[in-house]
Length: 376
Image (cartoon, rainbow, N blue to C red; front, side):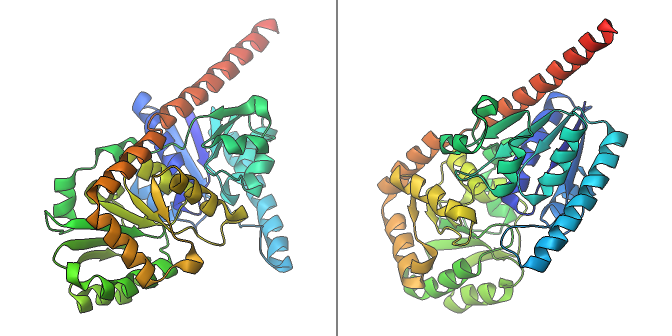
């Protein structure tokens, strides 16, 4: 079996594709899987590290740019479309999966033109422009939230949940303590703002430390900063005397979730899927410029259901953040309630359901080809 998984740019669009790749490879170790993405996205460094092949295409985002950028984006789309068609004629995939983002646009369009079965993954409540267009071309669309159904042809839609890598569920706390040089017995706050970090979250955490100094012997931090703020954040923890492991990027996410007692993060759909399946209480700070404000919609849903606390980016500061951290640290019963609510929202079987749909499409296509051949 040969599979192409296209998408990326951010971890939110990449990791669902990796989860599906792992599941398909687990079912059939002989499966050949090639990712398609850009040299600028997170996929360029993560996919090879995960042991998969990646093919780069010249894609670029269209929404929100200047007129000159839109023209350049269209030019690159047609270049990427030609390169995608040529590659698929050579590779002959049984199915092409779009995991979201502009990098999936050309490969899925090329697959549609070549009559190759396609699946589209939609992680968010509000579908982005690329996925809304691709929804008309894909054979099946797998959505995370029922609200997304309005953006796609109803007969194609499957409510599966957002696929999460199985090993996210298998992180070891004891291994994490060793890996990140953290201390046993301390309340651990895991902070991250997505694959590139989040400046506003980093600033708020640095400001919050002054209000939490009395807890520095009881609380420790694991913090993914992104490249830009790494030195400043690391120095802030040292200045206030907190135990912390600070890194520009954390690859060992299963261990990071395993060691976390509380998560402070953005509210991307893949992040929320991972937090809910692992049952982590969270303080969510939605990215304010997300398309159609979908991160705030995501976070508000979890807050309404009692699984998280939301702080809007405009309301975020050190005093507010430290108050929420302190409140959750002091209230184990509240954390337990949030953990139960979060796990009730998690869909650990999502990746298996999507793999079933993919294999069903492949089987149906092979059956159809068999019928055509027998009739000739």
